[in-house]
Image 1: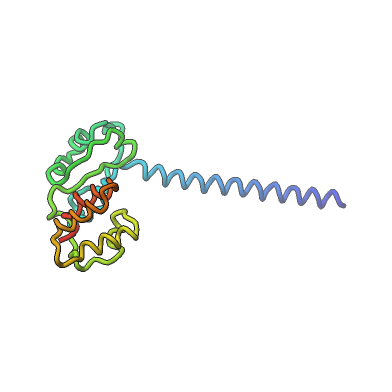
Image 2: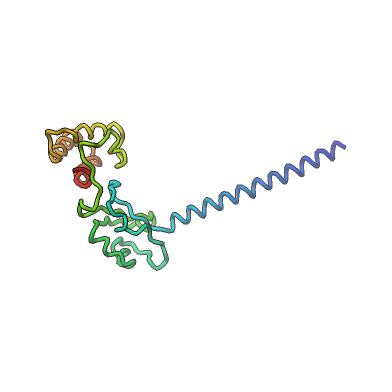
Length: 180
């Protein structure tokens, strides 16, 4: 009698374990399918996360195929009949853009971007552009000065943060595209 109970428990445990293995494989297959779908496309990323007024200037994504595997970003855009992007945006060359799945661009004209009044920004305004909270608050305090122009504010920031290269690049390039 004892052997029958152990045998039944063994069989039930075996089937439960087998069921969990099959379920786990099914979940992993679904995750891999989703991951592959993301990797099948090339997306456009706007440098410094600057927001566009009209998102229709860019395609959502471009499907990767064996025909369009090209190492030059501009050749890739030409192959896909997207030369108009060069008219509105500066396109940054990256030989690994196809593997990464991302083309980095930046608007040529500030009229293409959403601009915010510098006197109405909050402490967390610059967080969406990749800066930390403390730095965002500090920049806000500089930009809301009514006695300074934007150029003077940028000059103050350049003097105060001269060792932070990424911040200076952001401030010197993107400020005119996001603030008025």
